[in-house]
Each structure stands twice: as structure tokens, then as C-alpha cells.
Amino acid sequence: MVRQRVRLTLHITGSFLKYFALAYIFPLCAAIYYGEANWHVYLYALLLTLGIGLILEFGLKTTREIERADGFTIVAFTWLLVTLLGSLPYVFLGLGFLDAFFEAMSGFTTTGATILEVVEELPKSALLWRSLTQWLGGMGVIALFVAILPRLGVGGSQLFDREFPSPLPERLRPRFSTTAKLLWTIYTGFTAAQIALLYFLARLPLFDSICISFSTLSTGGFTPTTANIAVAYASPLAEYIIMVFMFLGGMSFIVHYHALRGKWKALKDDEFRLYVIIIATAVFLLVLSQGFSSYRKEMFQAISIMTTTGFVTADFGSWHSSARMVLLALMFIGACGGSTAGGIKVVRISTLMKHTRVMMRKAIFPNAVIPMKYNRKPLPEGIVRDIISFLFLYVLVALVASVVLCFLGLNIETAVSAVAATLGNVGPGLGAVGPAFNYAGLPAAAKAILIMCMWLGRLELFTVFMMFSPTFWKG
Image 1 (cartoon, rainbow, N blue to C red):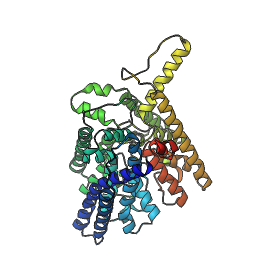
Image 2: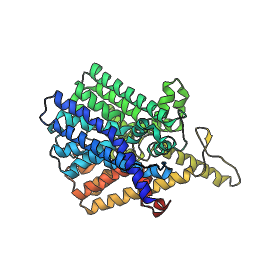
Image 3: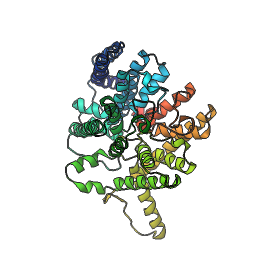
Image 4: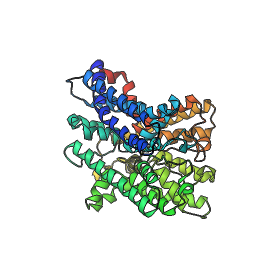
């Protein structure tokens, strides 16, 4: 059983790597266009990735059909291997392996935490690759995987569950491969629209417009400049455009799909309404804490942190402690399920709030039968239990990782916020990893822990932890 599962996992991962290798064509073309002498690093990475993919696919052929449990190993291992191979350009350009792996993991998990002290020291081709990793990771490597390899059939639906967790399964189309392609069409369309708006309306350079747009819909947060967006571009219009698309990136793409088809009732979704309420409340609290002196920076940072994008227009690390606490809370909450964002997800918070309300009513009327509904539909049994289990595991991982970082010499503000920012795929934290700093100065062990946090957070914890269960491998 174990050998067959490993063989199947490697075989399907190899199938995906063939297509992933083509992504190197974009930075390769950019390097040639800008006359960079290091264009060959992308050719080497392409050939190496393609070679490994072909060896795994054709060297480990199997007739075994994919099962639900296989989805966990395929998702987790594919993400790791893609990140490892995606770090090759950084390694070839002179970064140490750990730093290169950190930057690549931050990209593919759409975290946006960086170890680069001066971003512009990288050639433009590498900056494009850096943003492209976030764009590819934004909708999920697995969504792309199923769209390209429809032969997975029903099994692909199980993989999609791992990438788009939601209390109530929503099917846009009968076949999953069609659904994945529809989501990619929406994703690509929004990205193209943002590029056009930033370039033609806000007058940002085309290269910067592309990089920023790749990192916005993906809620990633990488920028092609060391300076923050407000300083680098001095364009309030650009900030408002980015805010809109960060907000869209934090919404469920299922809601996007229905809204774009004219079904505006989708905007009455319980999760979406709470998402808007939390952002509005956060903006009000941030403006209040700053003394009503401004609102644009507070609005930008609330949306940026809530959607786990991590773009910066102000040094919020120097804001009042009450404002920093609001932002820290947003790091844990995250945006909507079925979006490109990380964090606990609003859908889980909303469900637990409804459950709490039902429990309070039952405490008053113990004999009453009070059904629990979500979007006016009964919730399946076990959903709340699963959410509570996830929340417990999320808090446990955050607590353990924070304590370990404190033992490694980080102060409590830096440790807790670094874990919240990486586990929630946000990017910048507070303290020594705040918006005015980066992750370069952390000890190697701390970087390794935060790499694990990014991986765990993006794969919803259980996807990884399931593989450490003996029952899983016996199954």
C-alpha cells in the first residue's frame, strides 16, 4: 500500500512538473529582452524541472487509480517539489539554499515574506519570476494541476477540496476540470484588468504593473521595489486600484462566478457579508486609533492584511498598540474560503458564530429543536466539529512555533506576529519582521520553522498532518 501510494504520488507529480517547467519561459524571455547575461539560469531550471518530471512520469508508471487519501500526499509533495525546483533561479543567482527556498516557498504559498534586503539587486527577470510564483500559487498549483490533467477525473475533486475548503460543497459545473478552467479564466481576467488599470490610468511602468498585479489577485504581496507602494509610486489612484483587486482576491471565486453571471444574490452570501463587516470595522478601529488624521493608509492596510496580501503603504509597526492588535487579529482571521487568501478563513469564523448562537438558544430552551443553517441551508453533521478541530490545530501550531521562536532569541511581538504572518500567508509581521524590515536577519532555524508554517498554512494543516498518522499509511 505504502509503496503503491508513493509510486502514484511521484508519477502524478512528474506529470505536473512537465507543464510547470514551461513557466520558466516567461523569465527566460524577460532576461533575453532586457539583455541580462544570466538568461541561462532559467534555461537550466527549465531543463532540470522537465527532466525530473519526465523521469517521474514515465519511470514510475502505475495502473492504480487515485483515491481520496492519495490527494493528501499528492498535494503536499507536489507543493514541496515545485517550491524546491522554483528556488533554482535564486540559487543560480547566488542566494544561499535556505534563503532561496524561503523566498520560493513564500512565493508559491502567496505569503510575501521576503529575505531580500534590497529587492532591486535582483535582475528584472528574477523579479518577474518572483511575482509569477505568487500568481501560479494564487489559485493553487493543484487547481492548475487538475485543469491541465483532466484524466484525474473524480479524484481531482478531492484535491480541490484540499485547496478550496468550505463548509458547504459548491459545484459550478458537473465536471471538475471545467470548474477549474472557469476559475482560471476569472482569475486571469481580473489580473489582466488590473494590469490595464495600473498602466493606463495610474501610469505605473508596465513591468511594475504586471508584477504588482500578479501579486494582488494571488493575495501574495511581492513588489518589484524595496520601498513600499506609497513611496515607490506616489499614486493614490494606484493604491485605490490595488485595494479593489485585493478585496476581490479575498472573495470566494464561487461568488465571483455567480456575480459575473448576473446572479447578484450571491453577494448575500453569509461569509461575504461578514467579510465586508470585518473589514469595515477594522478600518474604523484603525482610523480611530490614529486619531482620524487620515483614512487611506488605514483602509489600505486593513484590506491588505485581512486578505493576507501584505502590501504596505505605511509603517504600521510604529502605529499605536491598539492598531497593531487589530492588524494581528486580521492576520489570524484571513479572508474568504475559496479565495486565494490564507488564514483561518471568514467562513469558519461565521460558522462558529452561528453555532455559538444556537448553543446559547439551546441553553435557554433545552428542549427546543434549533437547526443550524448556513446560507439558509442546513449544515451537514460534523462540519462544526471539523472546524473546531482545525481551529484547535491552528492555534496549537501557532503557539508551539511562537514558543520555539522565542527560545531562538526573538522577542514575543516578533515571534507571534512572524508565525501569524507566515501561517496565515500574510507576509509582513510586527517588530523585527515588520513593514520596515524583512526576514533576512532571522536565525537559520527560525527561517526553517517559518518555511514550515507557510507550507502548513497554505495546505490547511490537515493535508500535511494526515500523513504523519500511521492509520493513513495503513489505509
